[in-house]
Amino acid sequence: MRTRQKDRDVPGPPEPWNEVLPGLWMGGHHFTPPGGELEPAVARGEFDLVVSLFTRPGHGPAPGVEHIVREVPDQPLSPGQLLAVQEAADLTAAAVRRGRRTLVRCHSGYNRSGLVVAQALVGLGHDPAEAVRLIRERRSPWALNNPVFVDYLNTGLDVAALLVGLSG
Image (cartoon, rainbow, N blue to C red):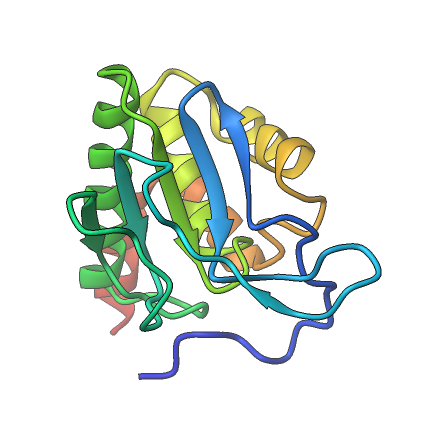
């Protein structure tokens, strides 16, 4: 399965992950520090829960850290993939409510992780526009540059899954 959209010309994130809300972190498997070259972002034991929408061997987390994997592509999603995103967002919001340090990550930490973090923020009481604004302010202005993912948030993932199912 192709998991990363290659046609967006955006700079890599300068940090491996950023805190969006206390205890809720968003990041990727790669980052490019200022003046540097692409580096791996390896989660070790910094987090209590790591939610991965993209995986790569050697990027952690450390043994003993809870790791939830829901691989989805950075492109229009199927109904099942939208439901997997909703499940990951629900688990993320529940972990944050319990005070668990939680990282949601994908390849660069822009789109797939942004969709899950934004939906988790909605579950924590933010409206979709505020969730997108927080993510772009605290992770990167390039975050959620996939307009389809922003449309999913504005529509609601449950409704989007139904609509996508009708058109398929």
